[in-house]
Amino acid sequence: MVYEVLNDCDYVIVNDGKNADKADQLSDDAVDFHDEVIAKINAAKSKKEFNAIVETLKKGGEDFVKKLNAL
Image (cartoon, rainbow, N blue to C red):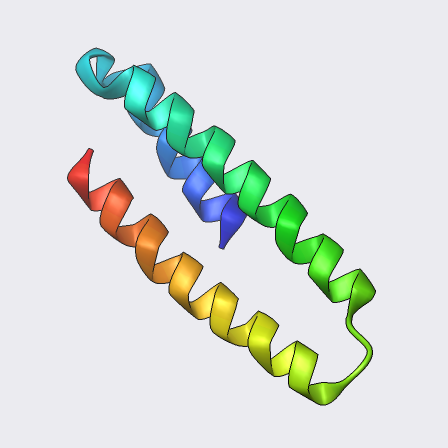
């Protein structure tokens, strides 16, 4: 998911100057989200913790799609 967000943001940055700053910030947010999720995965020990991570990924994916569509 993060790769797709970064790819779409790069496209906006290169081809749509008026939204380049917003796309750049969204790229930074996606990288931060990725780092946070990886840290949670590495720290998780139980199925309950992994289920919470899956929910975080679902919500994060929806949020990033909404933000991308707003660009």
